[in-house]
Amino acid sequence: PLQAFSGHGVLRYILTLPLNVIPAVGTALFLLYNGHKSGPGWHEHYFQLKGLSVGQRSAFVQGHRAQYTA
Image 1: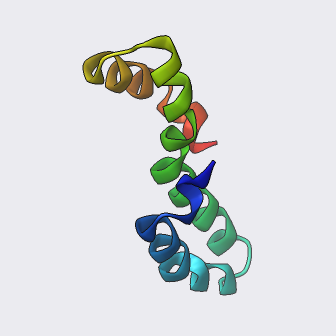
Image 2 (image 1 turned 180 degrees about the horizontal axis):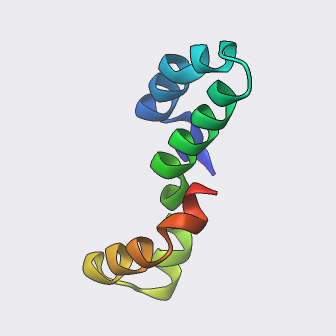
Image 3 (image 1 turned 90 degrees about the horizontal axis):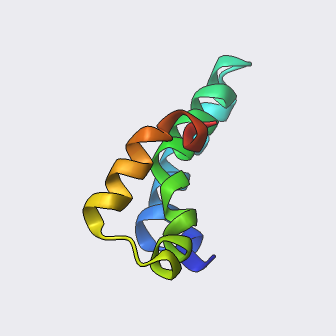
C-alpha cells in the first residue's frame, strides 16, 4: 500500500497531473497512464505471498496488462 508514496509514484503523479486540464481526453489519458505504470505494484505483496519468481510475476503482469491499466 505504501507504494503509492514512492518517489517515482509521486513524481509521475505530479508530472501527469496537468493532463487533467484537457477536457475529457486529458483525464482519460491521466488515468490510463498512471494505471498502466502503477497497477502491477499494487499486487507486489500478493506475488510475495504466492512465492512467485520474477519471471512468473512478469508473465502474470503481461497477461493481465489491460486489467491493470483499467
